[in-house]
Image (cartoon, rainbow, N blue to C red; front, top):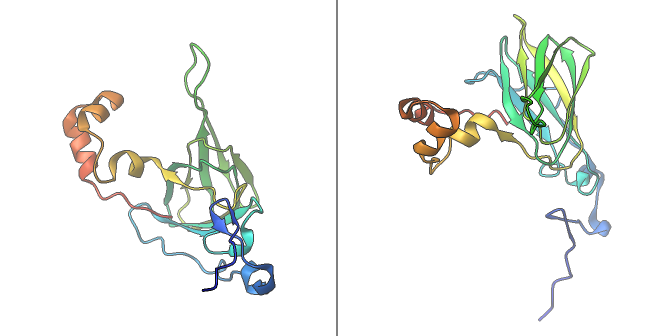
Length: 194
């Protein structure tokens, strides 16, 4: 009986045997093609990360193309393992992020900007952020991320759109709303644009 050669895992991914690595491990096409924005939020993210481009393993980078319909939204979300640098190629985006855990006697602070083609904005690692197309035409942006697998947590989906749901007593108290509001939000279809 022959034993399998040892496999090296880095960041949860198998490192490919260097003897069988090819140029295709470092190549991905298709980011020139617009994504389908016909959904509830009017945006779609086409991610390029270690899950679909093996050559990114251990490099600490990834990227994404984000397409927005007119008035489309990339909903409030966070990347737990990466900072995002966004640049607008087409259209006009209203973007922002919220500082977390402010000091005593302070409120969370929202930083926003209107971006036009060629503008760049940074969303620090782990902070809740969003992009909204304020224009009457489509918009396109590209984002670079400081992780080969930055992850994404879309806030509304995480809080209201999963099974089993968080107890509505917990959410009603946390959001300081009636349980009927929580029940309504939990009954909605929460679109995942990633």
